[in-house]
Image 1 (cartoon, chains in turn cyan, red):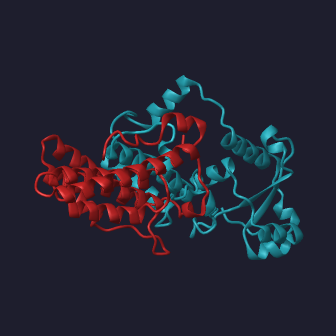
Image 2 (image 1 turned 180 degrees about the horizontal axis):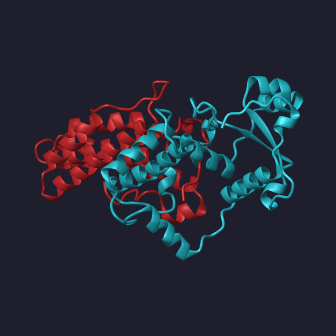
Length: 198
Length: 179
């Protein structure tokens, strides 16, 4: 997916490509519901038994995917996961990259794989933006360009007293149950944020 | 449900797997203690909690313990002290309390609970000394009264400092159980 344009003309998309990309972004941002019958047909086509327990191969594949999300190894679906996450919750464009791209497209093109896409008639969600800057991942280092989460937005370690203000508990066991459950949820949220998929 | 507190003492690091490992270990230790208490195996329950409080602790990059770790240790040491005093091991019980107070330095529920438990330990010691050492029993009783009054003062401050909703519910079952 990397591309290094040499001129303004090279930055433009043809109408059909623009339309295809616009629809893809809109679908990622605000997906339409799917017809239940079609959904079932898709599941049947893709899976022999959609409700069967995961096979050893599926477990292995999911573990590979998890590791890839953490930056260990590669996975064929990683770029798609990043693209969907970025379309749904785009990270702020680094100021330096924005300035480089907006002031000197040619210079930018020589140093990075930044690309502007001008949209005509987009849906309400996308029409607010005059342009969308896509930072395309380099395939050999997919996580290098993933948006780094702001650590301040992660759940922080803190006093547990507030966990008991609305619903007191009588025993030490019940208190540690509540503390461990609450922090376990927060760890999961933090992990997804670090993976860049939430 | 949980409202955020932003006091400097609460400033932490992101919740991570190491913190969760400690909380998981603590949870397991307390449930083991529950099981052993349910069959009147007080020594076994003491062993479970002793293993927790003497085991590995997760430190932050600044070499400190996270607020959750300090509070869970304080709560665990209060329960341990209660169990130790049930076996008339009063000095180990008071040592557990003192260690717990070192973790619970803020005037919060956990500190109040430790003071309350220390008062109960002194009360038990007073009963144990009544016949063979009446003077020692009287001194232990006086310490118990002072500690229980101090616990009430701390918990009153906790209740007053809470939101109106929290105040009506009181903070974690302050006196319902010594553990």
